[in-house]
Length: 326
Image 1 (cartoon, helix red, strand yellow):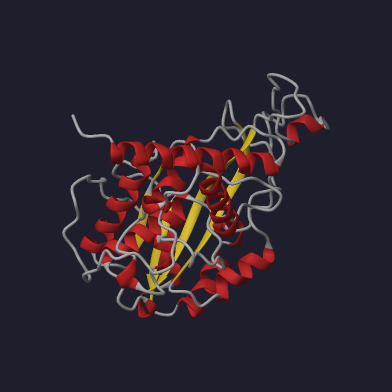
Image 2 (tube, one colour):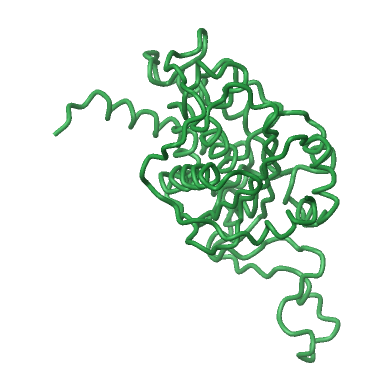
């Protein structure tokens, strides 16, 4: 099975479909979790909302080492292995729909997956073997491209119903070109007569303007591996699982985070009846992340920029809820 899944990295996915999928693995209630902060019911002042949003971002965010939160640049292509075709299509469609909601493109039929979802019956046995097959897919070797060796060991052994590994890269925001060197990187033609020129072996970024406060180097998500342990899903429905996968795919989420104080899809495995789908916290987080400019050089300031974007998104949601329809 392990060998066959190497080929899954080149899976062709079915076209994304905006119509509501018909498969349901179970019913879910819509009651909010007691004590959880639901953005839809917050009536406190804006400062309080900022504080709660900042805490949420700090709790669940898991950027690569010494980098800011990453996001996909243009689009995602989702591949699903080891599930029945209709269930695979359900997940592909839902993740693609959520991706489009934040302004990304969904992969066309035949695209090469940048997101690979693999369903197995024993993730603790499967995951170390999977990583060992192509370790450079998980630890590329460039600075700021993953969370490090300790985090990879947790990915292999964390015993969660769903586990994930996200690979990112610092890039030039103008061009999308890598801004960090990876093993074997060569710029241009090594036979061009420039033997010994170190510029051939490192990224070349043209600075549009010098600033101590802003930067044109941002972090892009490059690929995601999602391992689903089907024996540990419990009463989680197909809709809930797909929404959960969408959230952890589109944002860098800490597997060890404690989101219990917030109404979030991240709580779904603790109490499936209380979290039927992506919540307003989750939607505001994703929209705010993808709307943020992310040009602050200081990581703390960069995070604050994302927090402000999420808060603005939530206020827009509140206005839309209170404004009568045309």
